[in-house]
Image 1 (cartoon, helix red, strand yellow):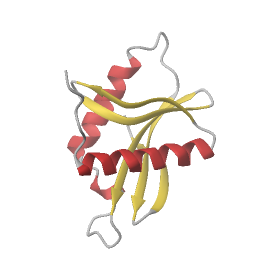
Image 2: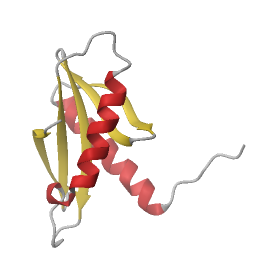
Image 3: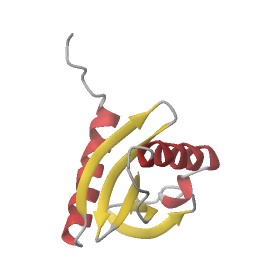
Image 4: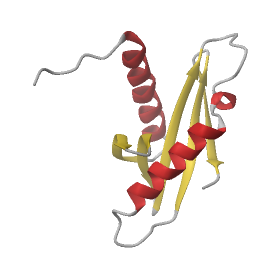
Length: 119
């Protein structure tokens, strides 16, 4: 099977996810898994902050975009993130404390929104 090539948009998305990962690591979080996928959704980054499992959605928008990065997360995307987090948590022998954060990147400015999505 041939390796799949990423589109330019997918490659840029990976670069922003890497930027978010490094930002969070500088703030003390530890990477558990990147790009977790299941039938019900995807989670960009799964990290640990102390004993808390942190599911992270990374959103990026260009400077001057009509809708900011955080505001671009609609109800359908929220459902997919929550469902994917639930699938991931089924792997855990005990459910750890957890939350869903958003890293919003608007025109290169990073904003970390803790517990931005209620599950």
